Amino acid sequence: MRTKEELPECPVATAVSLIGGKWKLLILRNLKVRPWRFNELQRSIDGISQKVLTNSLRQMIDDGLAYRHDYQEQPPRVEYGLTELGKEMLPIVNALADFGNYYKSVIEHN
Image (cartoon, rainbow, N blue to C red; front, side, top):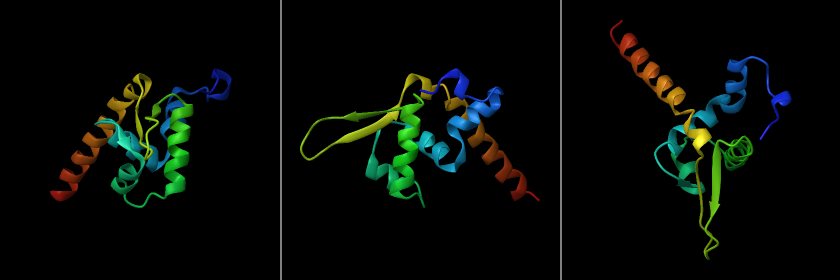
């Protein structure tokens, strides 16, 4: 996890630094439902590359938002999920989804 000194002073900027960009939000959207394996997560997020998904998951793990569980099996089985801290961000994801639906309904009626 980052130290307090490494984070922006503004709380909004802090939250944006943790989930900034479209990929982390889409990863959070999926992980809110259940733990996912890497390949199924990549297939479910249209346009994300393996490198970007790997880097995003590593950053989310480093920031304490996600975890990686290696089952130590052959063939390898690894799952990614949300930590309790990561689950605290779900109201933000849900609010964005609500606004997206609202916006679509507004432009549909114009």
